[in-house]
Length: 407
Image 1: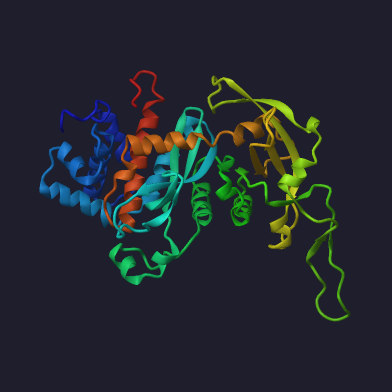
Image 2: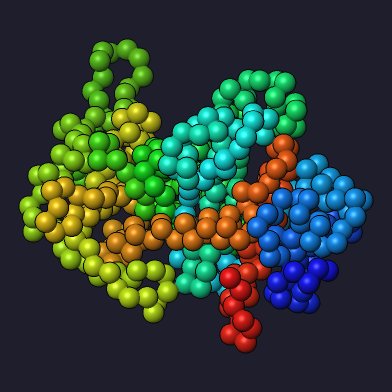
């Protein structure tokens, strides 16, 4: 092994950790390649693409070809690796929330699966890139990704030639980013890890299908929303529409006794006394300093689930932050947390989403998440799972007070 590898890589503990997490891989060469790839992700060096990874380990052409086949085409399930990492690491970090988000991967050309000119929050503009959707667990002692899904634009779904070149399975169809996020949360909810509130920005929070899906999975959420979405006040009375005649089935559609109003309208009518100064922790760590915000907490009923989807009305929290002296609120959230939830808990969860940026920074900046150069659909998901495996090792090492903490 090259002397340029960091000290944390050469520990015997890493081999034990990888062997445990990839024990579901059937073949010994798969397990060996998994360790070699993870060592490459943890090693010092600017590029974490396949060729420099092999070179830093003094590998041969045969080693390169074996590792390439393992990542791009080998039939192992990345979901099993993600689950094994989560079930091992999550109990160590005292998870408080799962965070949904997506991130961009700038690309040249048009052959990498899912690549196109599209808006990326990572780039802050429209550019040629892939978009990966992910869910992450955030806890008092660290974070760990729980799942990854590559967003496949509609033009890719209908292009048989491009799909064939990128080896995209026939069963993969177009799904929106919220649909992908919901599937990832559903998978994680079936694992042996604690269910905690789900957080996400307005791109996810305004999606009725996502919120309803999370609620039906038994998952709580605190999701950002747009002030234009419409809600009913909690005092709204719903009744079954009267029959229109003597024949036919009786109506089951619920009719409200008043019109819904936008979040902006509801908040605009609030008495200033409805806002209170709430102290909440800046992070999940109990030693983190308190922050303060001016919040209002109202009980509301979302319009779309009742009117469009014909579901039973259910009360939720509308959380609004309006800084003192500002002309308008700065943020809005909707949450299905219990009615007796404390205002401190609601404010803290609403403001926890920033932690996902720490994950993306380490996953990309140190572990090479965005360095994958292959053009295989399965390869992208394999790479993301193996980077998560490396990330889990670093998170686990930070829990040991007797070892130097890795970057």
